[in-house]
Image (cartoon, rainbow, N blue to C red; front, top):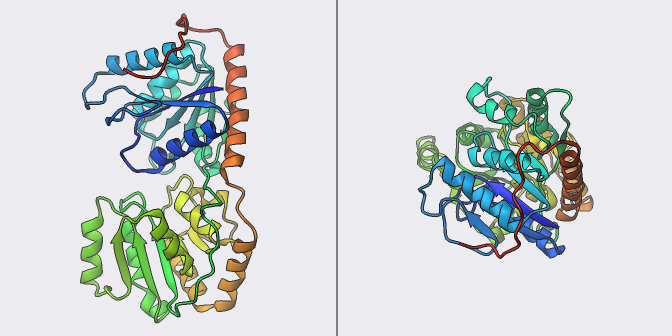
Length: 375
């Protein structure tokens, strides 16, 4: 199968969609598929990556022509569009492919909840509503607002994210004696960096002797450091910045609890990685963590910050409760591995093909020519 992925952003930028698309393409190629990408992201040319504006310049027409060239030269069996709330290139790719009779699957990677009507943004989604497109989101939570926008007659399926369970496995390490709370996140408002730090400021009273490590970088890095210094939390909260996977794994192996405070987290890859390594996870009940965390079993899902910090303190103080959840998470692996999500994607590609076959082509389809990707 030839799969053409489309996304506004890609490596070298590091983020959820960028890493997800890279990993999905790698796993599809490992199964024998031809997985390629067309993107608006600037950057160096790479094998299987077609960039619409590699030097950061380029008009809307340039991007449309790039998409059309990719469709004509690659002749994909399906176009898999990866969208967030603001994804003009992704939506343009979906429209261009669908109007040429190419099967299209759109996957929403963001949470639309709590953002108001956003008429200028929702119009991009609703403008695709009449086209033969299969729709999906990375979690049931992320699918809910999309279903409201598209209407009851447009199915929105769940195509979950995944982690490599062979890489994120429980590891036995000697207990340090210092209960540690870990969070891995972009230091941004949407990830709720500052609310998390305010919650962690209560650790000395909730669980004396405990500490926290917040891994990540982002625009709120300086504000986070100022808060820790101002509140005198240097011995309680560490902010090491971005860490490589092996260092994150070592940190998780010796931790007691993982906390994911974002309410508009569409899925939660970092939380799933921690869950796969056996940690109890405390997160928001409004987020996509509900895809793999059952409240009271794998961890706790909290409706607000007060409950969230109380649950973190409970796990740090109650060794029996924490050990029970840890034992469960170590014994029962999450089902969200790449074999599972690749199989789901394949079934949704078939639905996209059926949808395209049922609907008359709205524009003349270009004659495909098979040539190598490149300029």
